[in-house]
Each structure stands twice: as structure tokens, then as C-alpha cells.
Length: 143
Length: 151
Image 1 (cartoon, rainbow over the protein chains, first blue to last red):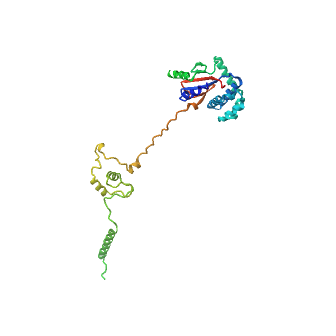
Image 2: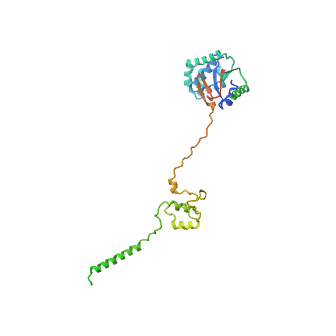
Image 3: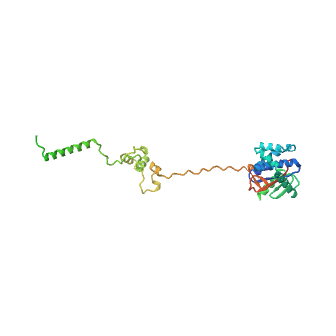
């Protein structure tokens, strides 16, 4: 998703044709959970804060493996978010429970490949090149 | 010395009055019958008539407004400048705003300034919908959910 998402945002989200949501997939254990918890806690401060943390996590994807809660607090502070609030949220099991619940929901739906997309209820599994996604968007918009 | 009889006294009094009247008349200027009372603002007719005549001095809303004599002279040189009352609208004299009209005119309202609309930057717009933080136009025709891992 990292490869095509910037193009989707620039070409379809920016002009109001597409709204984008992110549903976590925890396929790599604790590091996956850490990143998803940090994004969730950023979103609790502001919806746009979720996406700011989402972008930063993908930019520093290689650093998540060795990161911890304090690293997430530091990254959130760099974005202008409240570090103390993020620290408290990471310590609260509520964010962990929500992330786990969403991950279970996609398993229950049979989604196994990463990334997978839900386009207006239509499941698209596996990574698609941007060109193909763009065609799907244009076909849907033309309907 | 002749004694002042009532008759002579009356004559003397009458002469005195005559002399006094003559003296007063000679000291005060004779009023001009046809000149209107001086005013700070010229009458509309005078101002319009004066403004319509290219050669006439500009109408001034001061005490130095042209006298009827001056206006009459100017009108005589430009008889067609002022349209008759029953003329068609096309031949009517152009209306010249005068101070009296301006002062009494209703204030014109400024047209509302229309600020140019700034398009929404949907990439900086996010909302909460259920469990998700949705980026972009909440009314977008395509709702895309990305199932992905940050790793």
C-alpha cells in the first residue's frame, strides 16, 4: 500500500473522489501492534493526527522493529501531537483492544493478503499496481 | 423773536422729520428687490443652469452663487441647454447632481464583497466514522479501506 497510496491520495483523495480508511493487519506480532497502537492513539487526539502518524510510520518502517512506546511518543511529539497524551493512551489497554478487534474482523472476513482493499464493498485482494487501481476508480466514478 | 405758536411748532416738527428720513435713506443701501436672500447653498435651479453652460462658472455651493441676472445672461447665450418640462426623455437635459440632491439622496449600499472560495484540501481533512479515521471527502463516491500492516 505504501507504494500506491501516495498516488491515490494525490490523484483521487485530493479532488474529493475517494475517501480513505486504514484497517490494521497485525501479521508481524509486537512491532505490528506497536505501530497500530501508536497510530490509533494519535487518531484519538485528532483524526488527521492518525494519518500524520500513519505516514510517519511508513516512512520509518525499518525503525519500528526496534522501537518501543517511548519512540512512538517521540515521533508523535515531532508531529506536534501531545506526547504525554500519547504515552497515557499507549499504556491504556483500550487502544490495544480496538486494534486487535479490527484485525480479527478482517480475519473473519477472509482477508489474508496484504495489502487488500475494500472499494465500496468490493474486496480487492493483493497488491495492485496503481494503474489498475486507477482504472477501477475511474470505472466506479463513471457509474 | 417770534413766539412759537402751535402752528409754527408743527411745521418745525414736520421739517425735522423730513430731514431725518432723508438722512436715513442716504446712509443705508437701497435693497435689491429681485435678489434672493443670501444662502450658503445655491438653489437647485441656479446650480443646474450654471452647470449646464460650458462657459459659465461652475456652480458652487457657497454664498457666492450666481445671481439671477448672471444666470439669465448665461441662459440667453445658451437657450437650448435647459430642456422644457414637456420634452421627451431623450431630449431632456442631463441631470447634474447637486449638493441638495446629494444631501437628500438615500445612501447607496456597497455591494457585498464576495470572497473567492478556496477549494477544500481533502488531503488535510479527516473525520471519525465508527472505528476508522477517514481521510478525505466524507461524501466521496468511492470509499476505500486499506487492510495493511505498518511493516
